[in-house]
Length: 345
Ligand code: TYM
Image 1 (spheres, rainbow, N blue to C red):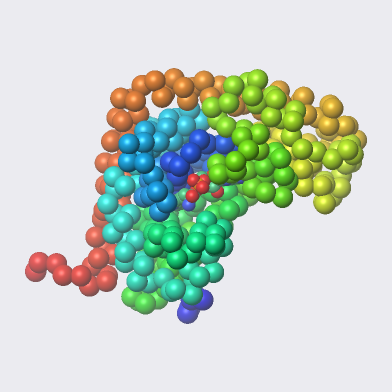
Image 2 (image 1 turned 120 degrees about the horizontal axis):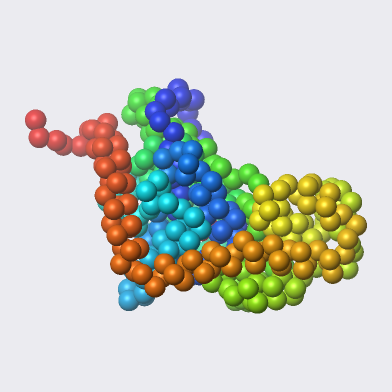
């Protein structure tokens, strides 16, 4: 896809990621993204935004959008992010994202975007009626990442293709403008059993905000009773859990629940199997429900507390936008210079 290898980027390590403000967050968002953000905030400078520019690629009610943005920021804080360490901000408040996205729209190739599976899923049968923004959405994502020259991006498995595109854009920019190593070839932090949490009603479908069945997902705002009940009702097969991890093959629901247990407990699937192998779901599900409640109920409670204080959330977002701009603006300024845009002599 790209021409030549680029000499390595040698700048500082930075972490960037974002979550769209387009519906209540669920266990997949928590395990695939938020929990990892919290783990990285002590290791690297982290730039974590609310992806409101991405959200408007499909219709959003203007009366609700700002509050939806605050809700995601509240979830970041409730999950344990410390705004003194991590930079938390609304994507649209840092203009560097949109400006770099335009330049990258002129670097990325149509053929690359044609291969993006998420556009195909999201546009469905109505490709002609989708917004142009929905199509070029992964290019904006590349700009989100490279406006900070981020080296690491913690995300769930569904974002893997977008990260590959980000690397292709970085490499083509570096090659086309003969600026080797200017943009890094960003690494996705995707590993672990929480990277792809499946629906509780169908082990073959991703847990998703857009699934019409609320029983398919555990929401961060669910009460302990809701959480326990959803785990109890989760679809399973009649066999006990296998004695080895390989025995999970061909058993998507069992595999998913073992993965969720592992991700919540900070264990591998093999360790979960070592504990529960040979036991039936009658034993495993109550243990999973207890664990899920013990991890998620405090997050939900904290989320409600933050939501009751929107002034505090706004202070975090405003401060974050300033700190984010202070890093991204000089990088985009340098990009403008490389592209050759007019500047006064
Ligand atoms: P979004 O808002 O759909 O999802 C937010 C994060 O949650 C992860 N995720 C999951 N992880 C595991 N299992 C699941 N079932 C599951 N569902 C969602 C996603 O992988 C994601 O990490 N395009 C992104 C937002 C974005 C972004 C970025 C991310 C915009 N710019 C730059 C990283 C870097 C999105 O729509 O995520």
